[in-house]
Amino acid sequence: MKIMNIQDLIRPTIKALKPYSSARDEFQGVTDDMVFLDANENPFENGVNRYPDPQQNKVKVLLSKIKSVPTKNILLGNGSDEVLDLIFRAFCEPNKDNVITLPPTYGMYEVLANINAINIIKVELSSSFEPQVNKILEAVNSDSKILFLCSPNNPSGNSFKVESIETLLNKFKGLVVIDEAYIDFSNEKSWLERLSEFPNLIVTQTLSKAYGMAGIRLGVCYASEEIISIFNAIKPPYNVNELTQQHAIKRLEKEDEVTNEINKIKVQRKLLISELEKIDFISKIYPTDANFVLVKVDDANKRYDELIQKGIVIRNRTTQPLCENTLRLTVGTKKENEILIKALTDLSGLTKQ
Ligand SMILES: *Cc1c(COP(=O)(O)O)cnc(C)c1O
Image (cartoon, rainbow, N blue to C red):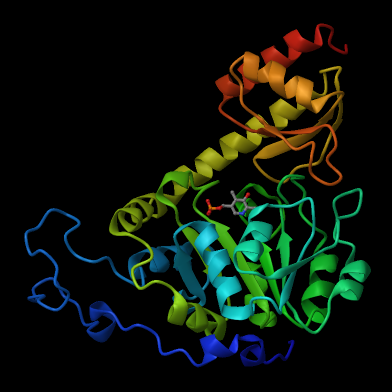
């Protein structure tokens, strides 16, 4: 097991912080028959007149069961965006520290770095969208605090090689965030299983994709108890609202429904890929472990506009590094995918036999 001092990585201001103590933090033995006159709430019941549980305990207990991770290793946020922002604010000193990103990847890491005045060291993925481990290790310096690995990667769709991630976890002296937003569509194992092996590992997941709850905004962070307690000290006290918690609980209690939908999406993914192979202006379909497919076309801007004309919105990724003339297609329902394929077939005019 890797030995590492997390305390050395925390920003000095955060280390010295005395967190806000909410009414619900100060009294926790909540039972339904008590009289609550501590938080200046309106006492008339309407379903949301009380502050939500600041620790989202019921949601965490369900996640803990599903993911086999103790609740003390879980932090919830208002979408992954909030979770990622907390990571920056806890560990990266503005105008001094830096983070490493591996383009092409999820755009939020860079936006959050810019918001927080953190330098970015970019080390492009290889042409097969794999991390270039040696180049990454050569590029880092003593101010490098976080390495972002998105696996399966958005927009390429592939999962990174286990050995590459392992080497980076072992050799990088800062924190390694593995963004597993698409892990539930993947055939690879989650890094959650190995959380206790790497003190510098943070895994982020979300209810926005496979769990079908983008609208409620619930992001999940898994890490050592030490790291989670730092985030707890700086998160807004009631960062996950009552309605979000209620919706999440209902959904997580019906985990088999989620699994069923994921399986349907995987079947559709396979079907969609086999149909995309017949479109003559698609020259490459990149391997995917996610609920989307990146394809290379003859002219991404032109094909994007043509699809918009037909009422179909996809993502044009042509301006991203290594992604010239690529389009990212989300796997939809059977019907939606058929509409997409029909449009592509019509545009292509002649399909490969
Ligand atoms: C969609 C996505 C997320 C999810 O973000 P939320 O804020 O939880 O909706 C996170 N990371 C990646 C790579 C994504 O593609």
